[in-house]
Length: 177
Ligand code: S3P
Image (cartoon, rainbow, N blue to C red; front, side, top):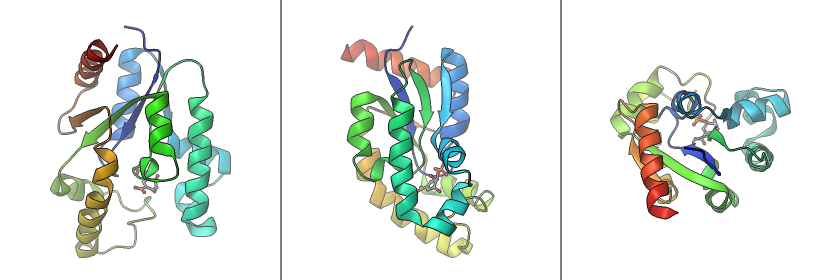
C-alpha cells in the first residue's frame, strides 16, 4: 500500500520512536527521518549541546522549523519526533494536518528501566538521580498525556513490531479514507 501522507511517531523519551521508525520505514520502503538528528545536523551541535549552550526555548524553535522543513518533502516519510515535539508551538496541529500521528505508549515503569541506562545523551534527565528521574517521568508523562492522546493511533510499545504498526496504519486508513 502506498502512503500519501507522512507518518509521525510520538511518545515519551525511551519509548522506541527511532528504532521502530527505522524498521517501519524499511518495512514500508519509505525514507526515515529522525527529527533530533536532523536538528543536530542543521545546528551542527548535539541536542545536548543545543540545550546547554542555547537553551530549551532556542531548541523548541529550531525543532518547529526543522519539523516544517522535513514535512515539506513531497514523498511520504516516516518521521520520529522528539518526546516533547507535539507539546510545543503549533506542532500538534501542524503534524495532524500533514500526516498520521502514532503514539507509542509505555508504562512509567518500563520507561524508567530504559531511561536509567540511556540518560547521558538526554539533556532533560541526564543530571537526575534515580529518585528524581522517577518523579520527573511521572510528572512529565501526566503533563504530556493530553497531547499524546490526541494521536490518530495509539499502540502499546512493548514488543511492538514494524509489521504490527503497518497493520494498524492500514486499518486506520481503511476506516478513514
Ligand atoms: C525531549 C526528548 C528528546 C529530545 C530532547 C527533548 C523531550 O528526544 O528531543 O532532548 O522533551 O522529551 P527523544 O524522545 O528522542 O529522547
